[in-house]
Length: 277
Image (tube, one colour):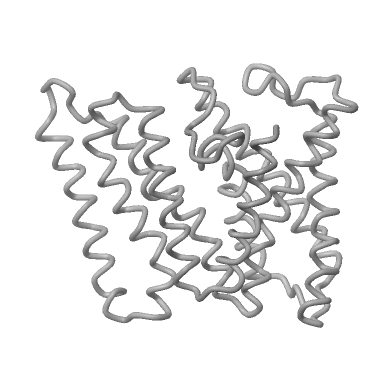
């Protein structure tokens, strides 16, 4: 628990500094780095060791290309022309390898290709929504919404479950999670967004619509809990406790950001259509 607290004390200010104060490229670089680590964690968990070590590079490159695409769209016309061609070239290489290696020892399988595409495309697309939020008006605040909703939900779910938890939520997936904790987590996400609205106003003097904030907290909490359970399913299937050791007390990137991976796309999609201020 002490390690967990110390990592949070150091990590949260560093995360806020990069996301809110540094230029957009810093957010893109941070997310790309997280996606590279997440790709390594997922391939190590789900694929055979020779496959994971041989094909991690493709997943990492795809992840960087996908993560940086929103940044390049607004900052570099040349990169936006080249990026689809590079992306397509690495995808073709992946499927050519599937054909060439078929029948050989430690051959790339269709299952492995699916894992690589989740690690190199799906997860970066999801985390890349944080960069899309950062590029919006008042982006330094917008980028925090999925984090506030998901992490407030995580925290409140933990304490509510410890205090009141009696009925198991998904015992075969996560034995310690309870329905009471899940409800507390949903409430925590909404309360977290109300507090965020107050801080946002104090910093920007812009009044966010309170009902939309509560909705974003609800959606972020529900999707965050779903993400937590989904990545717990993968861990149970492959018999691992944590995806990695990058964050002592928290595990790996997929252990800490599993809820954000699901919450960020949902919140970005909502913010495209609702008048938040």
